[in-house]
Every structure is written in C-alpha cells, then in structure tokens.
Amino acid sequence: MSEAIAPGTLILDDRAIQRALVRIAHEIAERNENGAEVVLVGIPVGGDHLAARLAKTLAGIWNQPVPVGILDVTMHRDDLDHRMAPTVHPTDIPFNVTGKIVVLVDDVLFSGRTTRAAMDAINDFGRPKKIQLAVLVDRGHRDLPIKADFVGKNVPTALDEKISLRLTEAGAPRDEVWLAKKPASKETQP
Amino acid sequence: MSWNRKHLLDIESLTAEELTLILDTARTFKDVGRRAIKKVPALRGKTVVNLFVEPSTRTRISFELAAQRLSADIVNFSAEASSFKKGETLKDTALNLQALNADFIIIRHSASGAPQFLSRVLDAHVINAGDGAHEHPTQALLDAFTIREKKGRIAGLNVTILGDILYSRVARSDIWALTKLGANVTLCGPSTLVPKTFERMGCRVTHDVDEAIRDADIINLLRIQHERQRKTMFPSIGEYTQLFGLNKERLAKTKPDALIMHPGPINRGVEIDSEIADCGRSVILEQVTNGLAVRMAVLFLVNGGGNVAPEAAGNG
Image 1 (tube, rainbow over the protein chains, first blue to last red):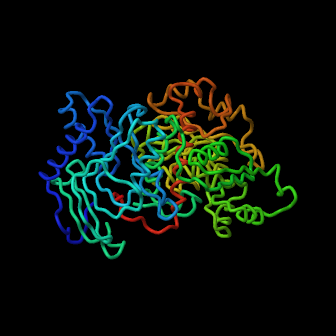
Image 2: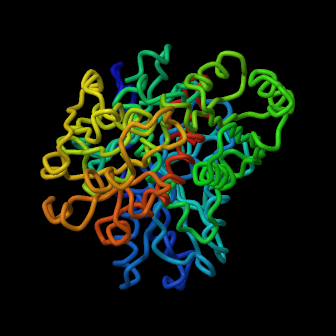
C-alpha cells in the first residue's frame, strides 16, 4: 500500500472516511428495515476492516450485533491464467448466509471483476436472499454490468492511476485514501 | 512476495520465503475442505495427469482430490497398465500426454531426476511426487505445515528423523525444508542406513536412539524401505525394532509434548508400536489431511508461475 514515489492527491482524510462510513451504515439501515437479516462480508485487503467498522455503527443503529465475515475471492478470480498466483487470504464466514441479506464490502470498485468473483464465492456458502454492494470509493471503468448500492465517494480516475486506502488497522498512522499515478515500471513497486 | 516458478521439482532450490508462502497459502486451502462445497474454481478447465510410474496410493489419491477440489480434470496413469510395459520411454509417454493438452504432469518415478528431465522436455507444469531416493517435496511441505500448525513455529524446534535415511527421499526433502525454516534436525538409525555424510546437509547424525529422541519436539519415523535395499543393511527386522523401534518405554523418556509423525504407510510393530501410532501425540492422520491442503496450494501457485507480474492488488 505504500509507494516509494510521490503519494499523489489526498482523496479522503480520516474524518471524511468516518463520515462516509456512517452515512453508508445509515443507508444500509434505511434500505434494509429488518436488521436481523443483514450480514456484512468484507473482501480483503481493506474491505474486511471497513466491514468491521460498518458493523459497529450498524449495531448502534439497530441495537443488536451485526455478523461480520471475511471472504477471500482469490480462488474465484477470472485472471488466474494471466498472472502470477495472487496472495490468498483466510476466509471466515462464521454464519449461514442462506436467507440472509449479504452486504459485500470492498474498498475500491473498479472493473467489477472482484465483485463478480465475490458473488460466485458467496454462493459456495449458501443462497443469500439478496446481495448488496458497499464500497468506499467508486473509481469507474467497469468491465462488467455491476453497480454499487452504497458508495462513499465517486472519484473520476484515469486508467493509469491507482487508488490506495490506508487504514490504522493495517498499520497506517491515520486513515487516508490517496490517488496517484501508477509507477512506470513494475520493478519500482515495493 | 509472489511465487514465480513453473514447476515444483525439489525443496533444495527453494528459499525459506518460498516455503513459507506455500505454507501460508495451504492454510487457506485447508479451510476450503471444511466448507459445505469443498471446491473452488481456480483450476477450472485444466487437465492434470497423475503419472505414477512407481506405485503409490496415498500420494496419488491426495493429488487427485487436490486437483478435483480446484475444479481441474484429472487422469490417472499407472505403470502396470501402461505402455511402459511395451517399452515406451518416459519422454515419449510424457509427450503423448502433453499432446492431449495436459496442463500439469504430476510424476512419481523410481529414477532420481525424472521430474527435472520432464520439466526440460515439456511445456506443462511438472510436479515431483517422489523421485527415487532424491526428493518428495510435497511430503516435506505437509510435514512442515503440520509442525507449524501444531507447535506455532518451526524455527528453533528439535526435529528427529528416525529410521531408513539412506534410501529415503522423504528424509532428504524434510532435511532441506526444516533446516531452511530454522529447525535443528537430528538423524538417527542404524549406521548402515544413516551415514555421517548427511551432516553435510546441515543436520546432526547420531546412532543412539535414546539420545536422539530425548530433547526432540518432533519425532518423525520413517519406514524401512525393503524395496529400495539392494542388500541387507541390518541383521533382521526384529533387531531393528528392538534397537530403533518407538515403543512405550522409549516414548516415556521423551518430552511430554513431543509429537509423533510418520509419512506412511506405517509398519505397525516394526518402526512404531501399534498403540503409539494411535495415541494422542501421534499426528499421522492430520498429516494426511494437511497433505491435501498443501498439494492444492502447490497446484494453485505453480499454475501462475511463468506468467507476468500481477497488477497491484486491491483495486477491483
């Protein structure tokens, strides 16, 4: 998540991230009247921490705990033949998703391929009543017909730009979202 | 770090980081085995050939299930029912399999170096499932995985490998893997089967079994491989059992939390007493479970090997 080059433009600071998550939590509560049906599933890396934060806010709104899971979509990706094997992360869905409203939580919505993989993956755990999508940043450039239900901020981007989310849970000094040019050469990436 | 090898041929050439990456990846794949749907689509449409020129049951079945749980198609090929009987060479057999668009060849062969040879003549991914007395990489990986899962670490642990070391590919792969990951490895057995030359691999050799197991955190027993011995290396099986077999009396002198491991198949009453094989300190069956996860991880990682570097993750 850290670049050796200039960090680029700050898109969201810690207070903006906090406000966006609180708003998304209220929108989730507004859309889904029965909180008992809702479970949050975060996609690592990034979405898992955001899902935990949303669950905390939602628990305050609904006065009941909201289950949170982690779903690694690596094994369901459609580009496994075109790249080196990606890092796999643990999946932990400690509840039955069948009949539930599953809110997928991701940090950045871009091509939509991660979301597609996540919808495939979640079906291996059961048949949700509904699947909704919450993202902190929608940067456009979709390859698939996928749209987020809850968006923290829409950020117009160029294809050669990169969004990076830094969260205190992942060791960052403060919560921030940055927009930067991609490094020219892959080798310059840490 | 990323995995960028097209084949898994041995442990000797891997770095500690690569070994750790396989073990970390295997942890996630182990969870897949506990789901209601024990299958992920990572290798959908791929063809895996189990080319077992030397017989094996557990390794073959483990690779077979691993491939199936990754949604690959798998063909089993055994020496008894094949053209080897008609005089076809290994290279021709492998090229024929490749001509059928096999993406992975998993090879078990009695000749050391057979997987390396295939990796030079084939475009397919080659995975070594045991070659002669050279290496058995996935066995070492599942051993390391089991130790790390049970003990929380590998570095600093005392691992004693007891039995037929000379003819054992498992011992060689275990020694490479465990010493690279920081364990203190001790080898023990009859002097004819455990020559001092193994000390060059970075481990300790002793012929005193009580001393070898006294401070061990892990006792890994190996089978006496009658089929690989060209001449008798010790007077009798009975004498081996008496001098080197793990029995209750010997076990009583070990650390109370020392784990008993065995790659199988076990010879009850020879290298291990029947009741010890079934006791709470034995993790022999967990090794089998972990072998499946490790082999899924290897197939998954090797599949991406040789491709270009991944795009920066997280933006999808």
